[in-house]
Image 1 (cartoon, helix red, strand yellow):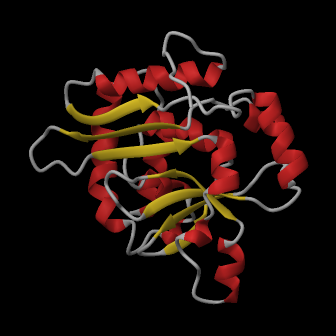
Image 2 (cartoon, one colour):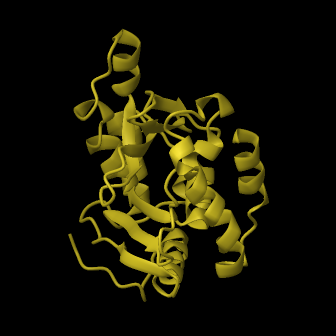
Length: 233
């Protein structure tokens, strides 16, 4: 691993992530526990080589839209919460390097599945975003089906299991930047029938996000998030 500098970005998505981390750090209404780019991963810092290896060695010829979101860091992560007393507004994300996620972070190392169908699914899922600081038992995953150019995105909550999301990888990371990782935002992009035991304890935090984020971060559009929350209440 090598040190990184936020002043030197090789790929466009790196600079965008650094800007969001700065937004989080500079928000007076947040207690920020972490907002950082990880160290650059040696031998995984050249996009062309990474995607060539994933295609030839791992059978995952990821398409150009995913490649546009490449970053060199082992992880891009943040953990924060609102300073308002008794506020349910908490955020965390740990977005892992695409190769590290697909090669090393297998879902079935943590959760084996309870039947043959689950075990088959979990064997293909790879963790690319999780919440180690809060330990919420929630994580987001790519389905590494051999030959895929556009892996399915799934969301796992230990209270409810694995759920397919209505987002691809580019849309996921774009929405992550908007939500700043507010806990449970992923439920808004799972089918409404999954809005059950795992979802309802998170509603107050999601509602507060939509109350305060337009004031704190007015350059984003929250219309779709608001509509999706209303559909699930």
